[in-house]
Structures are given as structure tokens and as C-alpha cells.
Length: 443
Image (cartoon, rainbow, N blue to C red; front, side, top):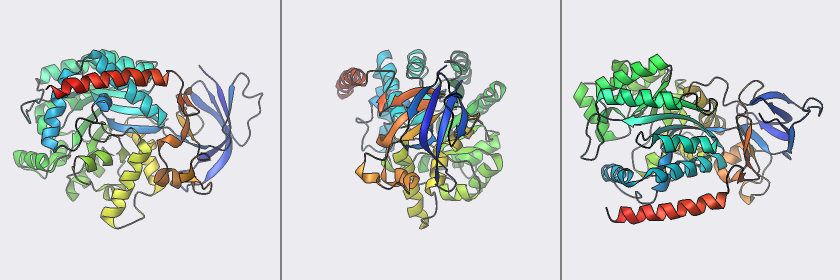
């Protein structure tokens, strides 16, 4: 394993937004020592990186996403959600194996470039092998589950039996869980109650509990769909239904969580479940604005996610965090909600905790060495060394990130991907995206 000594970085404190100049020794994939000065003899054999005062923060956790959608963020712009979903399913059907591989690789490399070291993916089963190969080639940390449905919301919904969903979950678990020296974990990922029956939801939760993995689903994303679930089960909505079905607990991730009653928010707090805020998607496809400030006030572990680029158009968690913070300030008329420290915790440790990690998302001795170094010295927009953490969120973006470590391995340095020729990947993806767009136009 690689060994690094990062000298002269300014370690960010997300509690009070202060920074402290330190050296950080990374060894055996973990933060081995953090001190004001580390003697060279303690770091014998380490590659030395002089951070020159760059801001050090934990790597970001993108806690809800569909990475393959990086190839289709253009064709689905400015479309009503019902038509958007139908067109999405049709495009998925005409993508081939190499499309899925390169779309996932492109998304993974983009995520790394913008400081995301962990993603929680709800993806395809049909092209599972090339997708997980792309994750492995990129070297990003991933929790992977395949979307399952057994209730047709529209003529294009890919429905399956519960037995088939369980069969796929077993295959996925055997192929993914623990792969790439533990960087990969499996999940179950039913799409959401409008397209998932009570029986499928409960069967998959039972499977997840038996395997010790997370249950990852959409919740309350559409107003009409949420009302349909409420009417079907005679309850407040999707969240109360999941509670009654025995789904909600600390190992449950609830993407979007928009259309919830106050009672349902109390149920989430009681259960320990983890909502995932995806503000750019919620704005772009007009889903609505969730009560994130209220959730945080109740001590709920809210995480952040970029969602798929077909809806959000971004892999940049800094942009995602800023959008979420601004929305909550606007809807509550309270500028103190989702402050910079809270937002960065949602982007780091909260997401790691939701995915079952207790040694990730915080830079401290013994934790896994996922870390970013942020260069704010070469960008006119963020000049102010006294307010770097807040300015990164409110005035910066992922392009300010200079260096990225995933479990102690150097993935980005001087704003360049280390393991691939970026231009070669861009050229390949440009050709494949153009060919896919030609096929989309003929649908």
C-alpha cells in the first residue's frame, strides 16, 4: 500500500469553521498520524506532498446517485416528470454494454475530480459486470444496488417478480460485496413504493437485514405519486407506509424525502432512518422542496446526493451543497439553517454514517484516509484565507479541489486524474455520447 506525508495543510474544523496547520501521515490506507509537525524519520519511505497551506477536508460522500446517467443529461432537459421517466426507460433500453461502462467510468472520474470519494449507486442489473468493472477501474468507493420494481407506473416500467428481485440481489451481493479490497459494498435498492409493492419492499428488507447491508430507496419524490400511495394504504403517505411495513431503521436510506407530513418526519427521527437531500434534481424536474431544516432540528442524520445527471446535470457536491443550503434558507426565511459546517457534514460524515461506516467522513487518526486538498489561491472568486470553508461552499465549486485520496491512494493531483489519460476518456465518451444521441433521435 502507498504511504504519503502531506505537509503544511490547513485541516478544516466543521464545528467552528476554523483551520489548523498540520502534517498528515497516511499509511496502510489510514490516517496514521496528524500533528503540527511530523519528523521525516517517522515517515520513512513516504511520498511527500507539500500542500502549501491548502485546505484539507474529508472526501465527499454522494449518498444517492445513478452514475450511468452521465451519458444522458442532455436529452432529458426541460421535460415534465411523467414524460421524463418514460423517455429515461426507453433510452436505457438502447444503451449497450460499452455505453454503461464508459458512462459509469466518466461519472466516477468526474466525481473524483470534484472531491467525491464515495458514491451510493442505484443502478442496472443487466449490465452489472461492466458497471462494477468501471467502478473498480476508477478506484472510487461505492455501495451498489440494482433498482427493482413490481408495480407498473407507466407502460415502460420494467417490472419483475419478487423472486426475481431476490435472485438478482443474491447475484449482486456475491459479485459486489467486498470487491476491490473492500472498496465495494452491496445494497438492496427498490425504486420506491409507487412502483414497489408492500411484499417486495418487505422481502428485500428481510434480505438486507440477513446480509447486513443497507436498504436504499426513493421516498416522497413526487406529490401525485405520494398521494397515490397514501390513498392505496389509507395512510399519510409513502413514509408512513414504509414505517408500517417495518422498513425504516438506521440502515435505510431515503432519497429525496420531499412530500412528508410532520408526523412522518417524527417517524424518521424515531426510526433512525437517513434522508438524502438532492436539491438540484428537486429544482430542475420540479419535484418540490423537502423540510430539511426541520429534519436537522430533530437530530435526523440527513445526507446529500447529486442524484443522476439526467435530472441534476452535475457531479459536483459543492454545487449540490450550496443549492441545498440556499433553498432551506429561502423556504424557512432563516439564514442560519443549513450553515456551512452543517452542510459539509451532510456531504461527508452524515453520508458515511448512513452507509454504515464509522471510520469514514472525518479526518482523524485511525480513520480510513479519504481526503481532499482544496486550492483557493488560484481562483479570483474565493480569495479570503480567513473564511475558506464557507467560501468554498458559497463561492467556490469542485474545480477548486486539487488533490484527492481514496483510502490512502492518490487519485487526483494538481487537478488531474492520476489513473487515466483524461483527454483519451473525453474523446471516447464524446464519440459514444454522439452515437447514443443519434439513436435517441430515431426512437
